[in-house]
Length: 261
Image (cartoon, rainbow, N blue to C red; front, top):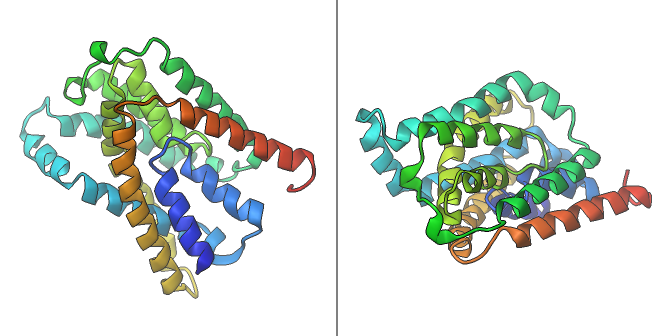
């Protein structure tokens, strides 16, 4: 139960902070030697369901407004649908390949690579010259959606790479983050449903462990969304980039010294 609660907190924070939730969910059991149900794909699905609940609850008014624009072919809802396609296609065709390549070495590399992109995307940032979420075009939605597809690789970070893509396309930080979260909702929902089928056939499911992880993930995720959006109104992505570099260093040091293999 303790491990489930800790991983619920980790998932709730790292799904939305641009530091990669998949990396942390792999690294925590790897580093601390946690095994069993908390190190299973089924539990990972439960944690993602929690963050999906956080997304739907926090952006409930946004989604109601978006659904009302469905009659408009230029509406934001259709732009989100277009942006979701790349990640959906990648998830279907590359799922098994990605699941087989979840090593700490790959995570360390992608943590550093995306950190460089974060720092570069912040160069010469001027909020007065940036556009809001209402200016997102279909072309930019597809570009950000293609970036989201790379988040299937552990260590990339869905929010990190899509916020960077939004900055590249001239968006304000907080608007890039808001669009990133809206765009991630169908992707997380689709992935959860895809994997949940396996959970239905899983033997000896410990529902108390799953419920604890899901609830903690949902509550933590809600506050992570709230405060990240506030943070990005005045601050850059640099602190997250430096944290990612530090985490990559810890991984490399742990492997190099033989502490973990």
